[in-house]
Image (cartoon, rainbow, N blue to C red):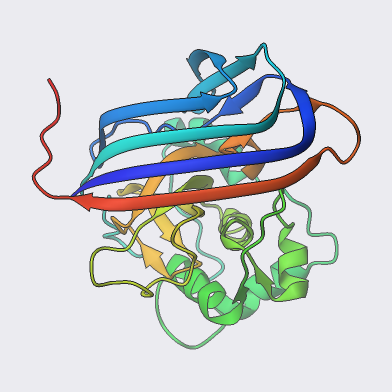
Length: 292
């Protein structure tokens, strides 16, 4: 499936401000399941770009600015070809005692993604995890946890930056896609799985409007779990999706702060930032021919 994607991030300020360097993580990495056919990046005010790969292998652009302005607008336009995702073929046992078997070499590489990154001082996460896995309904532990979050937590669109701690999401019983993904990741890490945070986009095919819970037209977040024998497999607890081609991966990281699509600073008076708007449009393309 070929898709045209347009992602606009727009900041408004009460007066012209000077911009510090901004890190942009808005270009996907080509793989067997995703290919970039065309790409264009427009920034106002004008910026110099320096591209690199971060420690996870994500493409990162560092934008530096010379001019002040009362708005910052970043527009990424991509033409993508999305293939099928890696299938989840070998469900594991549904008990909390199950520990996935990784080879010694895999475990060395995966250890940072296995080790939990958030505290559970009051044991709320451990208690919730045990409760889900003690449910008599069958199924593997990963799918059961994703379904428990999808069915048991409210979904909310949050425009403010940052991700809720799992304990906060448990207490509120609700969260944005990034909050629900982070709860899932920290839960499965406590089962011994390697899991990573993913940012990207969610699209609906023609005729499927409203079929997903998360807001189409915004950025999206989900998880990938390294399943023995299957590799990195997508789990989207917000929409109860597993290995689904409607998920368009852009960046992966150990913790959410390492995968923010746009991050940076500005110099100006307190309260100068008066608005933030993010819009994503994804349109299927019929018969697209890439320029050689």
